[in-house]
Length: 407
Image (cartoon, rainbow, N blue to C red; front, side, top):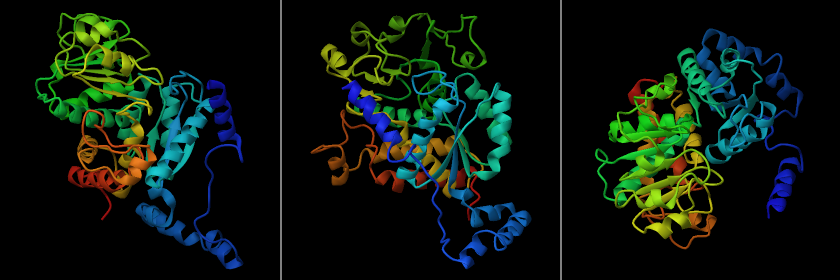
């Protein structure tokens, strides 16, 4: 099966032409008159207009519907530091999802940069081309610094999707899971295994959802991140807690929820058994989760579980978030992403899962019936209502946040 999948993947990417995306003209170029408008001399008119008013670029060019998906290839999927060029198939894949799910055009840009400063300067230099920037597959801690600097310097939305896109979906699914488990947000105890980009972005959003941050323990490869450790960098120090727990096993005792953003099979059945009644388990390592659903369900029956895989119920997939976050930001012509925009997306995703599932979605996933419950806590990826629901919520939040420039 693995051999068949490997060959199918190679064939998919190579045939009938190499790669997954292309550039297609949106205007006719069949006659001399067409050419004179597309290029010289006609093109001079929008050039003059944009020189006088930079906002005119949104009227006369594709800037307003163009996103740059940019990577340095230092943290590609689960493959690690592959280098910039080898990250290109993933960035092209991101482009396909942007177009298919939200009708957003993308240029994928792979940057070979020796330092994060060179990377930042390169992105800043090319930013006038785009309506927004999607940073992708950049290793921590550089990803945090890069995003912070670019957000400060640029007047277009910048989002590191591995951080915030993933965090939005986790929070939306978690809100619904806690609702089903009849858990009060202010009281729940959560363990996050992993301290990388997604984990560090998820915790602040959980706080905005009403979860008490002191009740969230983050665990890295050396154990619980607590105030007594002297090996924490600048970014991890923000998540240190006063606690006697030192290991994952200790942290999991009586926890209401586990969020795995780490590696394969790091959670044991005994850890699951030690959790509080009616727990929530998000084992999101992919393709091999921290613990498989069949193992979890053999230990106890009172839980709700999600993974990052499409072959199990409740797939937490960042493709539920980033196309619609960017669609909303572009539609608002936002100068940046705000926390309010992310929270609005979370609320919209959470609410959509409560609604009846259309027949076309059921057919796409081979399901006879789906309704809000333990096996359906987050909308399915190909649900057309996502485009109708999430971007408008993001636009409203952009307007309320004062970052929208569209009239």
